[in-house]
Amino acid sequence: MSLDLWSDDDPFADTVRADLAAMKDSQRELFDALLGFAVTATGAKPSAKWLKAAQLHVSAIGKDTLGDAFGRWFPQVRELMNDHTTDALKGFVWIASLLEGPEVASAVGNLASACFKKIPNHGALSSKVGNACLWTLGALSATSIHGVAQLGRLKMRVRYAQALRLVDKALADAAARAGLSSEELLELGVPTCGLDPDGVSEEELGDYRARVEVSPRGEVSLSWLRADGKAQASIPAEVKRDHAEDLKAVKARVKDIESLLPAQSMRLEAMMLEPRDIPMAAFRERYLDHGLVARSARRLIWSLGTDAEDAWTSAIYQDGHLVDVHGTPVPMEKITRARLWHPLGKRPADVLAWRQLIARQEITQPFKQAHREIYVLTDAELATGAYSNRFAAHVLKQHQFAALLRERGWRYTLMGKWDSANTPERVLPHFGLTVEYLVEAAWETEATSDAGIFLHVLTDQVRFLNLEGPVPLTEVPALVFSELLRDVDLFVGVCSVGNDPTWEDGGPQAGHAYWREFAFGELGASAQTRKSVLETLLPKLKIKDRTHLEGRYLVVRGDLRTYKIHLGSGNILMEPNDQYLCIVPERGARSAATSGLVLPFEGDSGLSVILSKALLLAADTKIKDETILRQIKT
Image 1: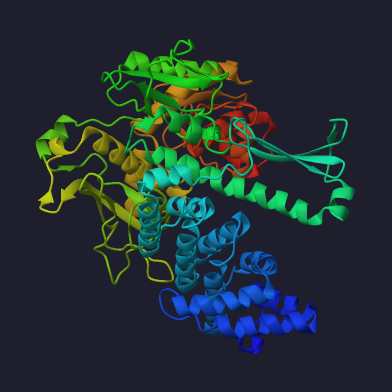
Image 2: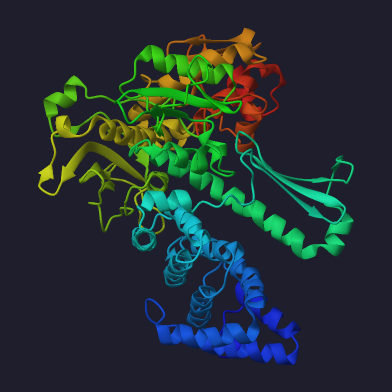
């Protein structure tokens, strides 16, 4: 196939053209033959005959040479491609199933992630190529853990329903071949990436050592050590000159670690909804002592049990031991199993004790566990019976809402004027249930985007269903109810227009009453958690003498005014007349606010925003922004 038919001004096509132009004639002929063969990739998966023919091309070029080429080409797929380019790329992906090594699996996994990213007004970048990647990763899973690792990462990241079904099928097929459950396969399929149990990997490159390290809080670093053990500030010139390929491999491993770590945290958090017992030997090997997973697992609380009785001891990893809430090592002689600890059903005093230990030991959990919000049935929900109105009548930004739904494993299609009856849902096959969160257009005069999509939606009931219809809330398992209501609370807390500091000036008039009520109203469960965290954090802040908690606000005393920051929305009122102060935080301010400050969990951007605003307003005489100063001095 002629490269002239490929996409113009496309990074992928341009890279392939440049590589071929630089080759010797004999090698270029082999790659030209490969290109001509690749475009014959038709159907949903390659036939045995096709793969046999592909093997001849792989043998002629060489696995390492072809793997290096794909490693250069696949990362360049970032833009829409024409049909000719797409067909060839699909063939390349299938051919990659005949190669070996973690680099190939990583390249295919990254390509799948890129292909399933949404392009505005188009959909996935390339479902055809993305689906081919999933087939190849499934094939690679039959011979190594590297394909499994990438499928596990995609399971946590990809949100297209069809792609997720293919991921699940590939994992189920691989698990069946291995005689394992999908959960066990995912555990076994996580590579250590060369890291030891303490998250460190060292490799000699000439007179230097490359040290890759994952900190206890999950931060990845690459440093260089001289022969005498002293640190080298940058990549040594000798390594760049004499060990270019090894250097490339080290950098690739760092990227793999950075992409796999968040996926493992998400996999662990999914176990909060579906806890399962893990044999103690497997728990140590696959969690506590696993070079990659341990970075998250050692920051979590685990319940330890025996086969003899249904009694559990709660513990966390500290200094080589599993210790209880008092910091005392747990006797391990009779412990045979472990499961992830959940605060639901635990005594408040025990939960508080764990929170205090985490604060005392300055542990940042990878997600909310000790501070996890709990949701139990209210009298109103007992009265309604089959649905909850706890999170009804909220106005949400639809595009942000849809993105967060996908991130949390829900399914939803954006609504517009042509289609205003879509319902967010999450299927829970393990429990035989589906949860729905009903929404509709926010107002009769609801504005739309250029594509005709509603900008906002109005929320209604949350309900659970099985194959026979709605399920009484009293029959929904308590853990399922709590975790799914927590999801819904997150959607409202993040996506409500009440969080928008500019809404009162620019939002539709119809939503002003709701905005005011949410922006300064009663605190929800997540905001109450934020308040309890601030009670511990405030004494550690440099502005501790200028701040205190009062009801639903963090009160900050500046030199010009006193400010009340709402703990739910982050919106601000100024004393003495409760005048509204609009501050739109910069992204950099969020990280600056918490730098050097150990938070008890990751993932609460609202807490960072509140802290950044508090630091700014406590030193209000140093504010340079004229827009903010004008409001303060008015």
